[in-house]
Image (cartoon, rainbow, N blue to C red; front, side, top):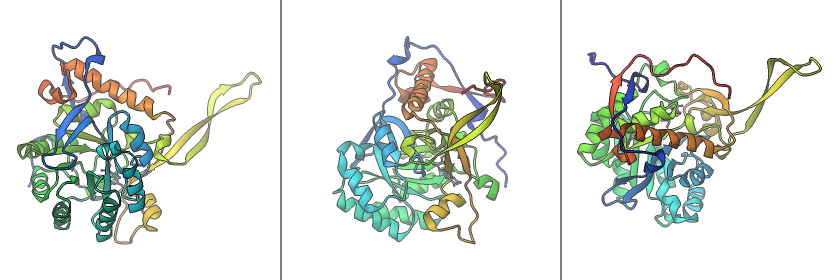
Length: 363
Ligand code: 5GP
């Protein structure tokens, strides 16, 4: 069976500007409220962006730095129960802007139990993360977690279809993680042929989630602030970012220097060699991640993630300001005084070409 209707990615659409009452971008309110009913984190109030639970992104230092901008972080699953407890016991706001992430194993569940006990219930958000959110084992794990922790807000995924979004919510998820194959260091589409264009996945999954009063986070595939705006305008309650937040000191990676020949010479005529700094960034299913965390790749698995060198960016604040500035501007183009109004204020046009790439950036 082939679904013949065209499915869209961020690159296939643009947001159409409309009459706007907003005189200055400063007027735009980037805080949004997302309610979780009876859960302990009963309401999220902040910027609806989540840092991904990836090495180089989902660190405690990132969580502390991003929280100051009102941004949420999903810690990687490689924090021990003791580390989680120490972090969440630190200040009460950490619990409002950070999730502990676990996988599907019994040890992971036990780790959450231990961490939550030691943190005396201060962990309000749990991210239950697997590459393939379609297995019955995963659904059962979400159900079990929900039964054990009725008050914790559960972020669960990843999926890309509305049917599985509904099943995950019925199993106990509050925020469904939507996105397979679109990530910056993801190789799932290459290795398996599996995936779904992200913009359409968001629209279809959010429709099901909102019908039952639950939320989604659009995970992966954003390359520029405009993509984040498209995801939110397309209905996503949150947007999760890996690559766009990677490469900063708070991510904890080793800075690697590389030397490049330039076409220029100095006053003595000697060729100028330029030093540039990079940080290694890799997918959580990559060979690098498997070697780092599991002592190597099991022979029945293929690596579905890439390892890349990305430019080191010394200032996370600069990156965040650029990102939030873009979102403010989107809101002012469509007349949304609050970021939560983006979906109702935005309409989209399908296109073949979203932006002009004729010149390369200097920086
Ligand atoms: P990005 O914002 O970098 O485009 O995407 C981040 C997302 O990519 C993550 O939140 C996660 O869902 C996904 N991801 C991270 N590592 C891997 C990997 O090794 N393989 C795959 N298939 N997806 C990954």
